[in-house]
Image 1 (tube, rainbow, N blue to C red):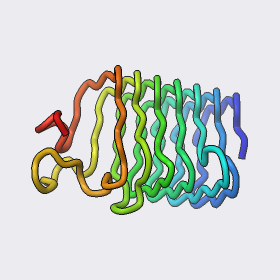
Image 2 (image 1 turned 90 degrees about the vertical axis):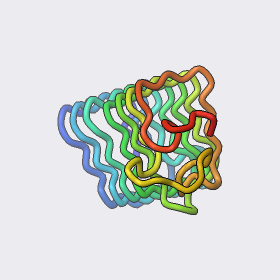
Image 3 (image 1 turned 180 degrees about the horizontal axis):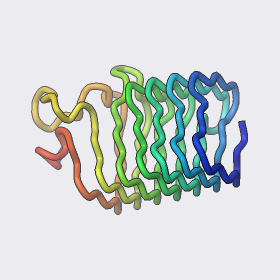
Image 4 (image 1 turned 180 degrees about the vertical axis):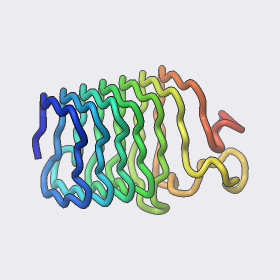
Amino acid sequence: LALDRAQITGILVARGLIATGEVRAASARIDGPVDLRDTKLFNRSGPALTLDRAQLTGPLSAHRLIATREIRARAARINQFALIDVAFYKGLRLTTSHIDEMILRPRPGHAFGEIALERATVGNLVLGNATVPHGPRRQLPKGFDHCTISALGWKIGDVHGPLRDDPRI
């Protein structure tokens, strides 16, 4: 599915999509909600989902998304990026993006790779389930066991979850 440079003035619904190959919306402008719930993205090489330089003025809902390769949104502008109960196996790259609110709650045991937030600006960051304590201090919530987070030069307005209590995580 290729939506590069598309101009969509309403809702984009791809709920339940099963794609073998890259799903792209690079440099696209989408002015309504994007629904990627229950989507399965399989790609043998390259990213599973690319939103580089995309402008999403509505929320992007990716509940229960499965991506066998990298999810990438470099230099994107996203209103709300909700990745809840997701499975990704090659990381999440959001370098130089501006995201008003990001909710990241990976499925336990199904999040692998680097979560790259270098030079990204995130207004409100929610990692894991911010309302439930997560084990001992200095530990990321369940679901991040196989991930590293790189965030050199990032800017965060507010953080919810264990990182708020102890930034040395």
